[in-house]
Image 1 (cartoon, rainbow, N blue to C red):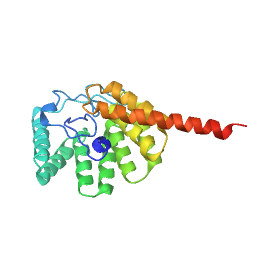
Image 2 (image 1 turned 180 degrees about the vertical axis):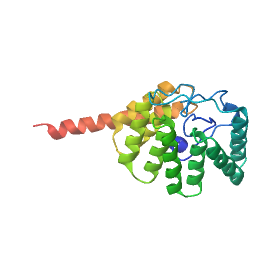
Image 3 (image 1 turned 90 degrees about the horizontal axis):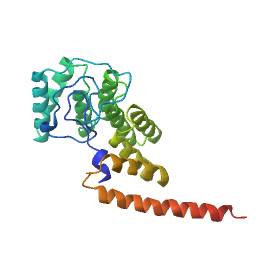
Image 4 (image 1 turned 180 degrees about the horizontal axis):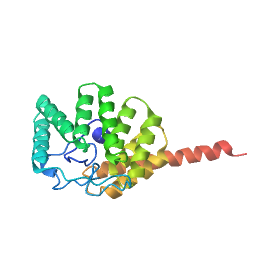
Amino acid sequence: MRSRFMSKAGSSSFGDGNGLIRFGAACLCAAFLIGCATSGDRPERAASALEQAPASASALARYAEGVAALEAGHVARATATFETLAREYPQYSGPLRQLAWLAVDAGDNAQAFDYLHRALKVCEACASVLTDLGVLHRQRGEFDAAEQAYRDALAADRDYAPAHFNLAVLFELYRMRPRPAIDHYERYLALEEDDPDARLIRAWVADLERQAASLTSTAHIETRP
């Protein structure tokens, strides 16, 4: 289940999106005012984000068609749609994020990084794009870069749940630091109260609490005079 926010990404939002899961076209928002338009239903807090004109109804419809094609497994059609939208609407990050994760699916991480860096030029403080970048770094074993990208995402939007989740996973599985992992899992759960896997995540937190207590106990024994 930890791979839920770690191995697939994309967005139903033309301007930005709801994290690292491909959502259905029904989730499309009615208006997109800035390049990093949404973090879930919350606006990005990045002061550097500039207001832009909303995407046209035609662009939104074509984007929805691309998402639907992707969900139906028509990868070539979806790719062509997002490539066209990225050319015609370079001020929006959504198509670039979709293309990044299509590149990941095709095994081309270098191309995925290129798309995400292009998306960052559109919105340099987009929590979702920064989280995507962190995921790619984590997959390449670049844990310092992954951690920095997740922290940058939370600096842009401290309530961006996927960044908390991914940072928790990084601390738990790759840094072996249970206490900060607990903190970020708990923050994720506070933000995503209706997550259907909340019980499972709480079980992880309980395991980590035991690990943290054990490490504290061991440290006390080793430092005892």
